[in-house]
Image (tube, rainbow, N blue to C red; front, side, top):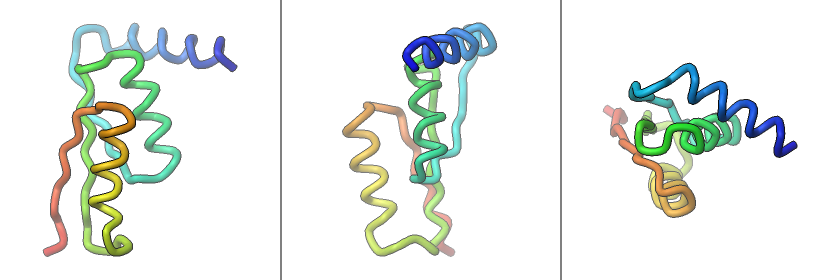
Length: 83
């Protein structure tokens, strides 16, 4: 499994180069894994965006922001789009 992860990290680095990356983070497993791989590959070149569209469980947006940033140190922008 480690080899697969390292292969993907290298592919991401090669594709991104010195560019910036934006990643939509939904709070689910798929986007969290994708963000973690990209962050491992390019570090601070990554900015994740989480959109609170108003249809989340109570406190879910705050939990995603608090827990994901605490666990990864990722640069996360939270957009309040409830209106």
